[in-house]
Length: 111
Image (tube, rainbow, N blue to C red; front, side, top):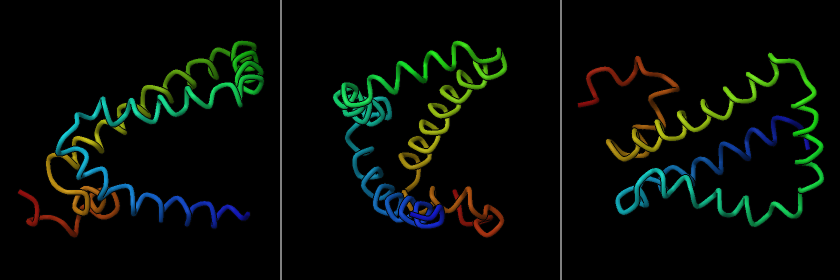
């Protein structure tokens, strides 16, 4: 499948994801919402065990720059996700999804 089809699929999934996330955030904290997909990933771990071992060995053998970048990616992913969850729980999913795309159009409409 071409890259733009994957991008379109991702955008469509996020379109469904945001409103559902807004509803779930009314009854659950961001850490719980973030932990549930982690459980699913752990359940799928046996399917990708060899790939994970190979990738970890590659990262450990890589330069310090790659190791640091891998750690930074992990932290920034968590921070970005929690930030989106906080934005959705503080406002609504539609407004939160528009802010990163074009904040100039929303001036005066928030708060």
